[in-house]
Length: 362
Image (cartoon, rainbow, N blue to C red; front, side, top):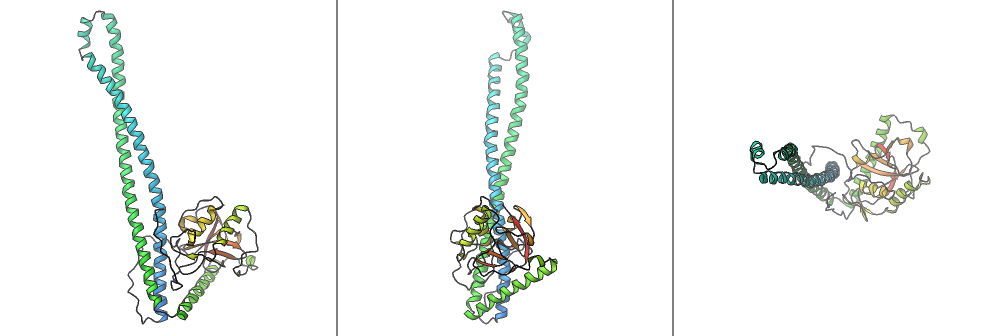
């Protein structure tokens, strides 16, 4: 990823449920939301904050996806530039060979072979040399073709490198646009929340969490999951799971994530003191020697997919459809995750949000 300019959110007023591995919504840009009206009712403020929340989530995911694309383009550009270097060496080698042939032809004077035979001191010997020269000429004709081929390959390599550079610049522009969109939306939501009293802000946060629980319940019911096998799982109290991870690698993942509890959320951050959701999960699995991509839409593709009933400590749990959040399962029906701006890394029920899938990277 290119260097990211992160923005620290310093108060609980930023209630936007931003997740840095948010929903990929190609082609959907941020809409213009009017500056906050100080006379907004609580319901109106909630509606505008929710709208900004969704826009920020989508822009943040596009930001991370663009970063992954930039990494890939930079790798391809490096390969293209290496190919140019190798091809230039091949062209130089072929041209050097042709130069040797040209020198030999010049020294021979280009005289007709019949004339050379007549004036040769030893015509028989010359005829033998002429056959060798003819064979050499045929060889060099093939070399001319080789030079032309290598030059065409060189031009093709240069064209490919130019295309990758163009793609890289376009992606960088996208990244800057998404960054600006996120900053603008966060500032807008803070402006709205500035006009609320502390009690009203707390009420908005509680309403948001209640809606998440209701959406999660509806999602589970619509999928018709068999919950009987999971009836013994209860919400954790935040002190950690009683179920041990299945192996040392999963243990390292859970231990690292749990150690970050209390660290504040910050979009685009992957430590050491602030995190977004996919930043925390990628850094946690790094402790087990597993490299995860930066966006949640890519993280779910890593490892083995597991069902809700198969969850083990260390597994990645994804939420919403399209996916807009990722957490780490820690056992006993609990997850640990980087939540949203103004809130710390904490544990919650695995059913807090609508379950979208899970994977086991290790």
